Image 1 (cartoon, rainbow, N blue to C red):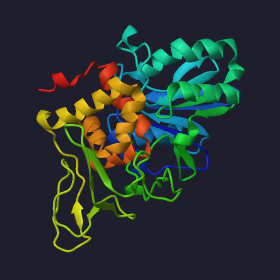
Image 2 (image 1 turned 45 degrees about the horizontal axis):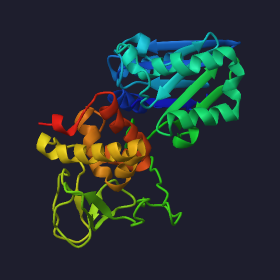
Image 3 (image 1 turned 60 degrees about the vertical axis):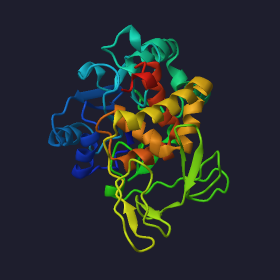
Image 4 (image 1 turned 45 degrees about the vertical axis):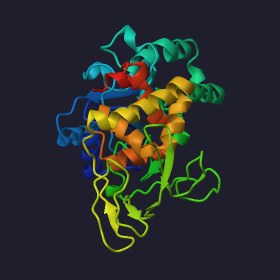
Length: 351
């Protein structure tokens, strides 16, 4: 998953923030910036939050730079697979997301390494100024999908972010996502935009049923639950009932209407519980490809979060993963498709 950051010199991240990033992205840390017509790149494999913070202070603090904290998906955990990557002598690139293009050619290398070698490097070697061409940037963003973001730095100081609109702004910097760091801990509250009304608050694009809980049962049917989201917290509130919330959430029942009933902690799903969720996502993929999974993620974000959390360890609580799915269902869909396309996961394998 990872975190990609475009940091101006005026932004200084706190020790607590860097250590929080380490907790979710501990498989490599890299910084790149341009100075005096030369690009400077520094990488490390931190063994603790203290290590990462000391490295950040030494190489990123107070600089106009792009930095990247890695959580391994493809490729070994080593400095070679630590972002950023060389594109040309004067251009380097870091990436947040998952790319399923040619990875089987060398399983020791990351998906980013393969994409740079196969797509980015030939183009920017032939014409380095393509990096600054809005048409090329738009085309590249379309190719990789909004769930992926690139940060490119050139020796002359030019910085380009591909799919910048899919990121967020925090303390003056641009961050590629909100799931690779503890947003609520640092007072950040993302706003989800309704697809129909234009008002703040999450709305399912396919049902238009605002602030409801939608899920699909094992037989393909659907149902709604009256689960209303507290706008100032990450908890779910039950409207006048003490019944349990959607399956998989730990319930703290309360007698009084409007009290918090779910702590939204990460839970351990059994294979029997996860199998119908995998089957639903897999069937959507077989019918409509990546867009089918994206629609399923929008319709059943807690199930998509459960699937991602089941296969990828240490990504956060169930609530944090669900927030990620709701904010960027395409990125969640890319993760789930990667299970089917790259890891060859099928429902029949879940015993």
